[in-house]
Image 1 (spheres, rainbow, N blue to C red):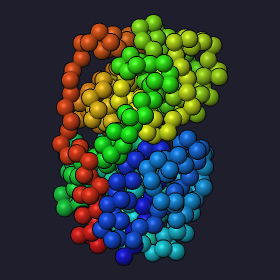
Image 2: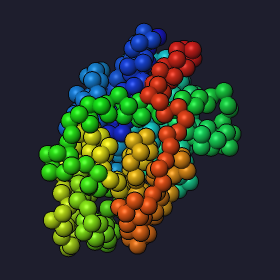
Image 3: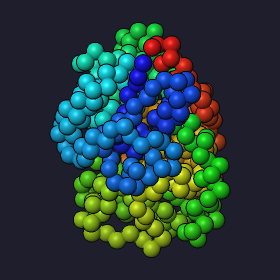
Image 4: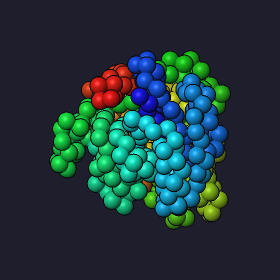
Length: 358
């Protein structure tokens, strides 16, 4: 029996790698398909190299585009791959357009679908990712949840409990595997930093960076933060484009970097005083690492990181963000705990469920 595992965007690689390793250990035949949703070297190829992932069996090369055009291209191209391979199962992860498109192509061919990171809900339907999550969960046969809220949400939506498997967090499998190497590299030293004396920034969501008004608010806020701490800002291409139209200059205490390889970024994150982000996965990684995290969003689909971890959900109002920032810099912050089953073994649990299913 064969499986197709799908990757497409940067977050998928770290989630899928532990599953691919575990499937190989269980002697299942796996074909890896890369949709090409992220195609820049720093957003894609470098992850194959660092995570020791095999070269994709098929690269669809869909590239960028609107949500509709990108999803449609993936649907068309992935259907061809399913017809060729005739897999017994398709595995998708997360909430990007590749996730929904490949799940939809598979289910229309009566191929079972497994969704990794199922059940997460922000309850904000203005987010494209939320739509992708809900629809993918609705058509999947195996639903692998990373935290208790995911399982609860699925049950509340009427999903049969037999389909739901609480396996823990695959992203944390990758973090736990590579964190010793990341810290050994000491990437902060090449920027003249000693550790715990800088703030790491990642911001890329359209709601935060696409409009000139919003990007100028963010730059003003970052400049105020930089008065108290060094800032390292690996910048997403979307954010970089928006900054070109910004009339406010960044402080000299803010260092802009190109998107970083996974292990270097992980090292920087592990030794930061705090992280400011609008990403989903980074909320989880910082919780596992015990690093304070400010999430510049009105909601989160990962509530365990706020309830149990080190994540602070501040919204997007600058004064609220700066208040929490000042508390963290001055040492007034929660310690946090590591959630259940975030232990580096989620990939193995998933592989075992798949083995029984097939």
